[in-house]
Image 1: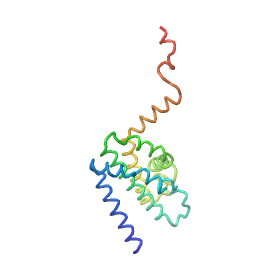
Image 2: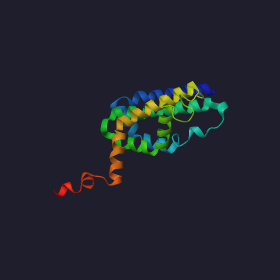
Image 3: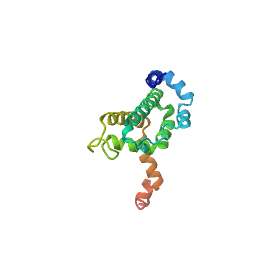
Image 4: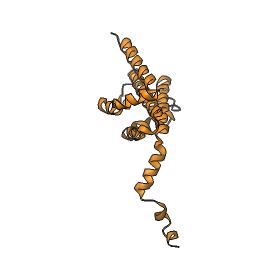
Length: 171
């Protein structure tokens, strides 16, 4: 089989998983089948796509971001379909891959990495990065990740109402 046939087969499998993840029951089975553990084990999100330094092979980088976006869409669909049942797993996924999330969101906003607005960007690559950023934003919204992180930062800093205004509590 050629590379194109393999990509078509892979895309068909990912499309099927996305379709399954969009129903509550399908999402339950995908998540019960240890989707997050499988993603951790395969290392897809631990590979740094930017370490690829061969400018001639930007197509491989485009394919990598495309694959990441498709997988994150499945994660997002499963989390949305399940409601609050798997929020903790979704937050852990984002926390575990914080560097990739940060890099992707910055790059999609044109901050560093040859993204939009730098004059050196590859439009197809920028589109793939944007797709991944959009998919990550769905996961972030579905898990309430930003509020969770803000609350965790406040707790880590030891700031609570009593610590901020200690004198008022004695009045």
